[in-house]
Length: 104
Length: 221
Image (cartoon, rainbow over all chains, first blue to last red; front, side, top):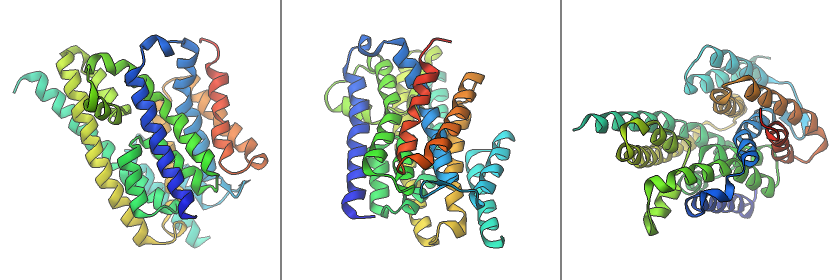
């Protein structure tokens, strides 16, 4: 990854995310009181985080690939169903995936 | 120390420490994606909104273009504007303090502030500032630890780091799935992202999945 690429992502993301927060503190409420906009906005995190699970867990170079990561994800689902705390979920997934990666 | 003060301080600090510890996962994910330890730390200092940070490095890790990474992070950050609109009349701050309030406007500071409503506006303001600055402190400390740890470990796959990152995303989305409509949205998003992945350049499937949110939120339930 080139330095200009990583700095662009870092600085643009930071500037935009701060601007959004500041905008919210500065505009009258009625500007974004539209109920449809609010409903969609509430679903955006779920849609994007779900897509990121797929992109990071099942995709390699634009191909859907089943590998050691899926084993880790399945263990993560089991841990979440068992109401395990976040660090346990992440570590359990990592350990499972590493084990499958080394032993398959 | 009055009763409301003690309750609010306890709520704020426990949230700050628990959530701040997730910074380890971000620090590790960011370094695994190819960012330097300095850049990773600056992400947590300057962007300071966890899901957006994870999204930016996640898109980069999957080989996406800069615009996809920035776009996904920004879309995830839009909910902070809605929080800010709710908080602004409560905080009533101007000038430099408004810049600080804006930077600390995240899921957790808003959540704790709103949850103190029964204790009155002073407790809500205290909850906001204490949770916001507490998460800021711990999130940044743990980000550095995670970044240095990942740097020392080397190859992400041999330590399971490549599965820890999607598991972290799953852990972020899971508590939000409170009813069937939200669960259906998550399942549809995963299905949609899987289907369009072979047809779009890396990174774009993630941001395109926002269309599922548009479809699912278009009509009132």
